[in-house]
Image (cartoon, rainbow, N blue to C red; front, top):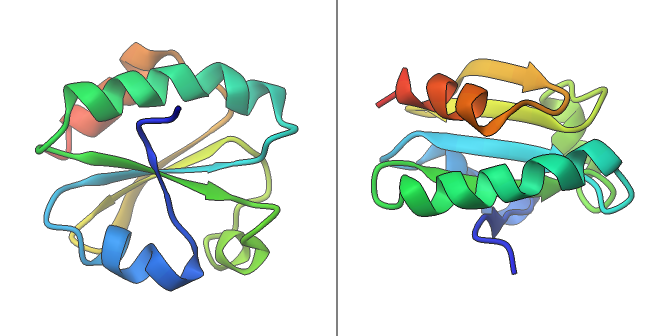
Amino acid sequence: MSKATAVTADTFETEVLQSAVPVVVDFWAEWCGPCRMVAPHLDAIAEEYAGKAKVVKVDVDSEPDLAGRYNVMSIPTLLFVKDGKVVDQSVGAEPKSSIAARLEKLL
């Protein structure tokens, strides 16, 4: 079971844009191999940074409009959001250390 919270277009505003802590948004899909490779890293980060930051997942197949709003062309795409604004982004599978380092800059 994922430690990251699934968000939809209905919950994105509250969970991400209005969050009091930085948010890592994982745009992914079930069929995406690299997405499955990154998922355990994101679960670990969600646990390690609980209370200081949060990790959410957006299924691009279920939420194509949300993916389009943020110009997600390839997955996995990670958006790093602070104070309601995208401040960093990565595309493709990255090691946990790289994801954590990007997040650390926002804390």
